[in-house]
Amino acid sequence: MNRICAGVFHRHCRLSLVLLVLVCIMVTVGLVELVLRVRLGLGRPVLYDSSPVYGYRPLPGGTYRRFGGARLHFNNLGLRAEADWDGEPDGKILFLGDSVTYGGSYVGNDQLFSALATRHLPGYIAGNGGVNAWGVENIVGLVVETGFQPAEVYVTVVPEADFYRGLVRCQGLPFFNAPPRSGLEELWRFFCYRENNKRYREWTAFADDAHKRLVADKAAGQLAKMDRRLREKGHIHVLFITPQKAQALGREDRDALVAECLERHGLEAVYIADRLAGLGLPADQIEALYHDMVHLSLRGHELWGQIIGEELAGRLDGPHHPQTSEHTGGPILAN
Image 1 (tube, helix red, strand yellow):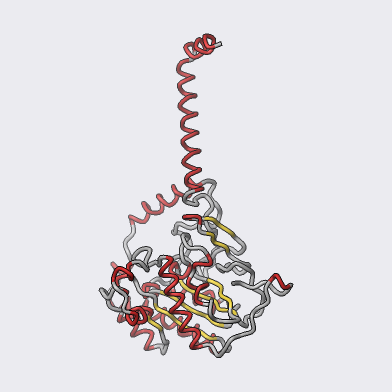
Image 2 (cartoon, one colour):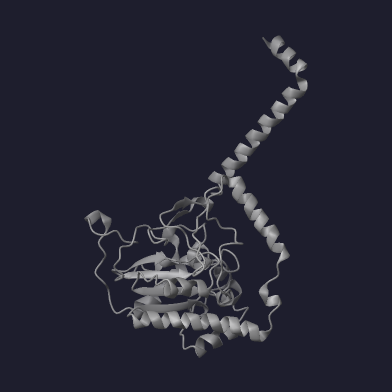
């Protein structure tokens, strides 16, 4: 039998080598795909909708396992919350913001500062409406223009850079409306995104100080309008400015232009950097709060949750009756 196989191989040497190479390539591709899916969570990214009004948001009802096995679940309203929300806003807290609030794909739902901030607020539940790469105008577009107001309390947590983003669209970002066919495709499209962006410069490279002021002031004015609309309807709205790592370490000052615009529009902001300074943490502990220069580590989410939770506790009138859970036959609400 071995002689027969050897004879066939020698008679079809080139074809056999081609087949062997193809098999090796297929096995290698399969192993790479397995690693990308199992170890990195690639191949099934969070899917987004698209809107000219608010840009884009995660589609509702999706559950994903991403980097490091972190579990991301989006409820019926597209919020990072474990259970669906009903139509009653009482006792609900909606967190709004960009990727800092969203938490990234390496943070599970129960590890987000939005979830941790409400642990000691009896009767209140939280939903995380943060979206990757959003700006202030995306938030306003969703809440004001589309009337997305499912909660009693609204907590906006943004870095100062969000006041310079304008309305961000999904197109041109490494996000998906339709799922990729594989982890390799997702990785390849991210590489193409990075390469494509090398032909662009930041808009600030073409803007003078007057134009930068115009952009920041417009965003602050829009946010102030949202604040007024919410308060007119009897809602509570609290704005937090989350610092970059350099600001938290005291190496950079707050953005004077953003602060000026907020003051001009009469919008109060809680600067988390001020609360951090009051804690007197050493530099190494502050470093440990960050995943990178802007986004938070798990420890950072814990501390932000504590700071925000304490601020909310001082602003809310009193405890609400605990919401009925699905186990008691009542409406299903977010944790």
